[in-house]
Image (tube, rainbow, N blue to C red; front, side, top):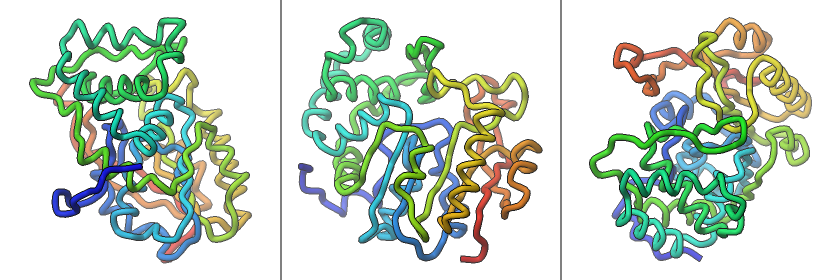
Length: 291
């Protein structure tokens, strides 16, 4: 159950976490490129869920079944806790906010190295996930080969650790969503003709040295991108609407050259040097046009 929300206190539903590669700044470019009419909605790499929350805000998902997938178990646990238990989550986040310090950050980050991590319970793990997301360097989610969170603390003077209104509104938006900790490949089990699938996977690296943000303990490079493309093609044969965001690289454009490809201008933020930030081109591949 969620708390009553005063709609006048916020403009729209929005992600409750920061997410590298999130689409909040690109929504004005992406929304006009999605189908005008579709049945059920799928985000198999949900991440921050920016497109989902925007579509919900615009009432585009009314009377549609929504499926949100991700292979990141801690992320999906956080989604389910926001959906089902926002009260306790907010209470915990407020306590974490009061205790926030460099020492506290690294103590909390180290939880996943301990055998009793899963035994801490869903709400406490979700609290940890959101706390780290709000206080780590640039909101980056990165794990090492053992699956341990290894992002250093960020240099924030007053991080917004507990945004109650955003969490309550996100909880409301998620009430009818089916949230699954599973591979994007499972989208094949649930889709039917005229459903809409939006893929936003880990991007293909622009250079050989730029793939530094391990989204999970699993890589997502040439082989994985090709496997995703095969799923894209299978969905196309099922008459499912499919859109796929990725980096503007020869590899991706060649892979999807039989489909419609749109260039989108994005801001690059994850770079330690200001000279490495600025506008960068991305692509949106679609199996439909002018819908």
